[in-house]
Length: 329
Image (cartoon, rainbow, N blue to C red):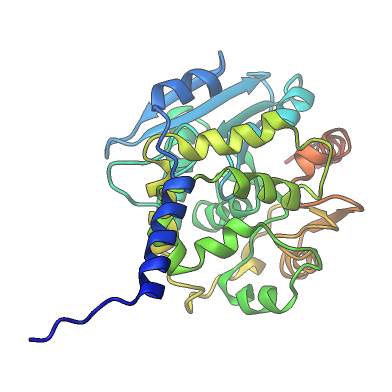
């Protein structure tokens, strides 16, 4: 058989790719080192039956109304620290890291599905003996929140949706109603199979920088410390593989029918008008679908109002929760 010769141009391309890969290569950080930096005195760890170790915090007024808060994609429970600081004197606030995120990271089952997310929330709330609570979430965590309310309606007293992901049926509409600003590059790249094939070993620092600046609308809260938090948590041993497992297992919007009109809980919908991840138009979709909801839009704010405008957003949550109390909820 005649051997096929590799031309000089192909050789050059291959050598360039090898060199580029070596330049961009970044190994994992030891989990123990990352955990030591990002745990707090209130951090706790719950080991589930499948071996998953879930990082959570139970903070604030232990006699107050419990609020459970769920972070978004690529984020962690640290995103809720501004609300914990402002609301904790009155309310009991529980935050947690979902599988493939934060200090929970990779789990033995490699199950990073929406079902696994609901199971994680249910495990933490059951562990803390929380029979009823207010449930809130940002971005993906907002989607977890309303899905949990559909699954366990008797447990959820009220919902707080912060720039939340919507039902599968809204997926195409969300794509057509793209935000004006450029979205985080990491989400676009992770949607590409070629990138996922190499992403487990490349240095994600510049993606963390661009992603934070885009998602937070170039807010001054995007400090070196915030960027390093995203960066180092992503590099925690096993987490990049877990992130890729989550994106590889996603099958698109599917045909699942999710009817939000059956959710009768009072719902507060908070949104940044300059959100580059999920269009602000989605807030109107939520309000139209949910019979007992109100919307607050923050001008000049991006995808994370709880961090970008913590005082204003926390005060809006406080007002909403006071009204619940007056109504006897």
